[in-house]
Every structure is written in C-alpha cells, then in structure tokens.
Length: 123
View (cartoon, rainbow, N blue to C red):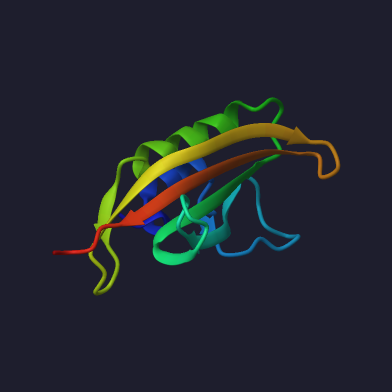
C-alpha cells in the first residue's frame, strides 16, 4: 500500500501525487505529508509504537467537492489498514480527525486528515 504509486489517487491529483513538501509552483490539487508525532496518547510519553500521521489536501477548485473527494480516497485507503514497516511488527492505522475548510489567506481549500498508527509488538 504505497500512496505515491496509487494510480487512482494519482488520477484524482492530476498526476501530481503525494508530495513531501509543496513548492510555490506545485500544481493543484496535491497532497502533502504533515506532522508526524510519536507518543503514547494516554500518558503523553515518547513512544514509537503510537504515532499520529497527518496529511494535507490542497485544492483551488470552486467549492470543496474536490478536496472532500481526495480526502475520502485517502480515508478509504488508510483507515483500518494494516502493514509492516521494515522489521517492525504489524502497524494499524485509524482515522482520528478530518476537516475540510477554505483558507482565505491562501485562497485554497485545505483538507486535513490525522491518522493514529499503532504498532503491535509481537509476543
């Protein structure tokens, strides 16, 4: 499950795909990685087994339909997904927060999705 090589997501994004960081010249729409935090949500202590991963959706179309369509595509691919990262045990993703709004300062529609990535240790 790699978002960068997902053809249907790439089509929604006009071939732009997922960007590490968007430049001023990045074509719209696009998705960027946001902040990733590693900590235990209950205790607040650092913990690589409990992370939050954020994605940002950016669109300049009239209305928020495109933003919401891309957000829904990301949600369908990631919410409930299970995968392994390197030598780590199974990691489960769950959607924690989603929001779509118009950013007047930037004159763009901005979608934000935050997922919890919880790694299960093998016993």
